[in-house]
Image 1: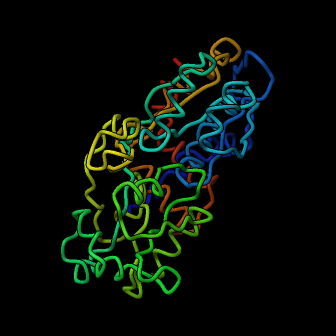
Image 2: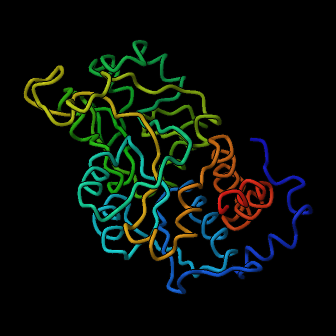
Length: 322
């Protein structure tokens, strides 16, 4: 992965020191000294984005806190009550229903798209095609021999699907039942644990089927494919009569779409300058993939990669507050 750090630090040592310390920039005049609370979730890219935005706002003189939160319930509680001010990554793939409920409440505001497009689905390494030649068509998974090829001693003869943490949603248990797949869903405890298991399996060419999402460095590091499920439509999740199974919903793949930023409804009045920056904040998908890889694969800190990205993109950042 191409590093984003080369040459950046020497170009802006003073700027990085200022941002890291969270000191006010010259002529900063925050509208309120109350803390702006930015949500941190349980995957790398969202926490990189939260760290970058926090540093940008601190440099403008704002009091900023990073708050560990639950992904879906943050839309239902924190952002509606004002206990959270901003959330940077809400994916159409998994948070669609929660975002609709938040919109209907009138207590949150959708702050615009982050930039990268969201894709999440079941994924398998290319070497598994030898044991299940019908892949990536989802119907190949119904073959008991194919399912057994993805099994572990704990799930045999059923295949094993490694899903994300339960807080991510995704309806994988419902999908397995609705499509009649001979698979058992096992949820990873954390994002890091899920990708550590992928790394171990990939090195040994061992069977694995798991939830992969993009933007993420994994799609560049590992050679494989997403399962091609029946195309998602809103009716698939809401109308059991839609689709292949007339008695159950979720008989399709996950939706694709945007990644959205959300804010507490009162942010624009209490911190109009910070609100303007949060609305303008975007990041290219290639940058986000590279930054995530630097943290997860190169063991660089969130602060280190955030400071380097800010230094490299200072002209763009300055335009967000104009």
